[in-house]
Length: 125
Image 1 (tube, rainbow, N blue to C red):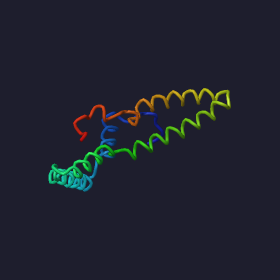
Image 2: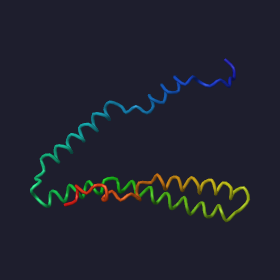
Image 3: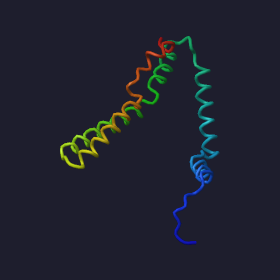
Image 4: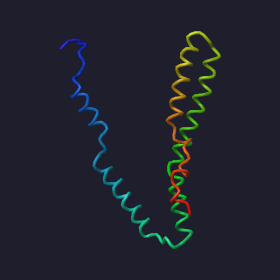
């Protein structure tokens, strides 16, 4: 078979993508076991103890903060790079403008600016 510009059928692409994105059974079991273990820890916790409740609330409030920090740092680095592109001029400034627009869209999607405490009043002690 020689060179061809024909694209694969949508069903074939979808099948390959699903296979590549599928989580292996062993990983599913590990995740399910970990989730059950954590749920059991919460259920076994002494909710009458202020320290235990505080610990649980702190863990929930801090969940994902490392990811948010990394995202914020990447956004800051990208902003610095774009500023240097803007200073060059010519076609580079057009690319920088496109990147700047993309950065604005990424910041809009960044959950680090959301105050979850406003929407989660029942977790406060």
